[in-house]
Amino acid sequence: MSLKLFSRGAAAVAFAAALAVAGSASAHRQWMLPSMTVLSGTDPWVSVDAAVSNDLFVFEHQPMRLENLTITGPDGAPVEAQNKFTGKYRSVFDIQLTKPGTYRVANVSGGMMVSYKVGGEQKRWRGAPADAAANIPAGATEVRKTMSDRRVEFFVTSGAPTTDALKPVGKGLELVAVTHPNDVLAGEKATFGLLLDGKPAAGVEVTVEPGGTRYNDERGEIKTTTDKDGKFSVTWPRAGYYWLEATVKGAADAEGVERTSGYVATFEVLKD
Image (cartoon, rainbow, N blue to C red; front, top):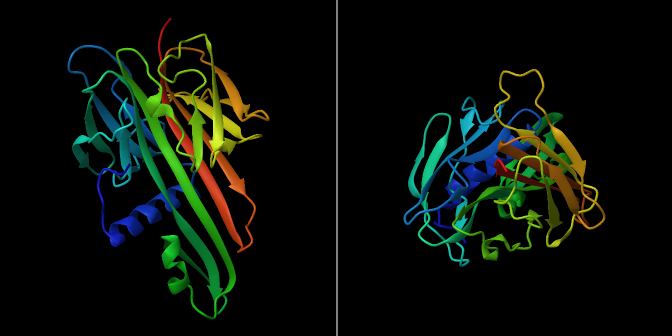
């Protein structure tokens, strides 16, 4: 699904950036903010801002890198992003919606972080899992390996909503659209599900936060937890853009590798 192939070195940089953000998730949020999510007309376009920030939907920390950006069209085929640019605090790109239906726009990243000690000094390494063994010194002690994967996405519809682009890929933490993500209305309840590697993710805390709260003392967070089938519901208090996040941390596997999977989505809630 990737739009472009990029060098091994560029991949390592992308892995490191994603893991660095994951390590400070309590302060920095990753997000993509589309200009609109429900459109009509014969030649609609969407412009997108993408960044990592402390304040939600505010450009003040660092841009989101676009090497792992994928856009899936209503027919399941990849779509090329237009006019991509990365600046000091944000990245931007445009999407031409040439076919009617729902598009899935995702930035999926992952990699490994290893912490260890050499001579009593704490060290860390981040990068692709295949490169880990070559970058851990033979005399390292207290080695701890963590695999991290994160999906950041939103959905946009031209004309009537469709569902082909919403199909799960079966890897990482994903959203199941019981309620279509472009059919969410203020004051109404929407139901979704979470899958981890294609299976229901039960007991996962989900945080939903409205945008536009930069100058408010309260963020207006909504917290809920997935049920035994991985499903959860949100009643949107008002219209506007919302940010959703969920994280699953697993125990170490047989090789001692821990895993953290994250999911982030932006929703535009419309007036009834």
